Length: 196
Image (cartoon, rainbow, N blue to C red):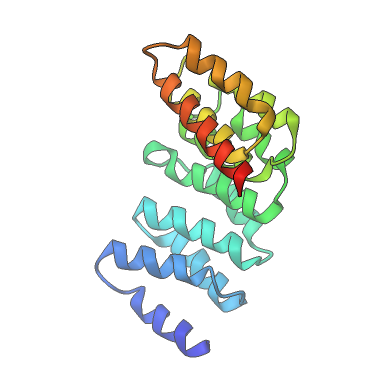
């Protein structure tokens, strides 16, 4: 309601960053130019990286036409552990809802946190696409534990029953590896999804 928006605006002045972050998250529920303007201001002026990251995610949820320019700016904004760029990947997925818009961010050579965000989004957007299943298995073979674990987790969320045998092979072959536990978990998640 307009009254709720007014209350949230006043709460953006709170000293505690966790309160301001919660307010910025809530503002994403409002599909109005006013809410989008508040979020744009938060993205540009807030000192906290977590609030700026949440602002770009929430801005994408408003559907405001200014979000594309803000995402482009966020992708160029350095931050601790690439928090803002990773949020820009999430915002791109929310706005476009297409695998093709996320694939460039998952590529080798991108910062790890950006790739992790893209891999999480591929699990959400790539359901039913065997090419995404194959791509995630490619990522699961990478030397980086962060990337391989994210890929195996994403395979579970993707829910592709054709992935089960390949995941079971990782379970049997990667003894003592962290991948083994995550591949086993992915198999269980897929099987639970098939039962529902």
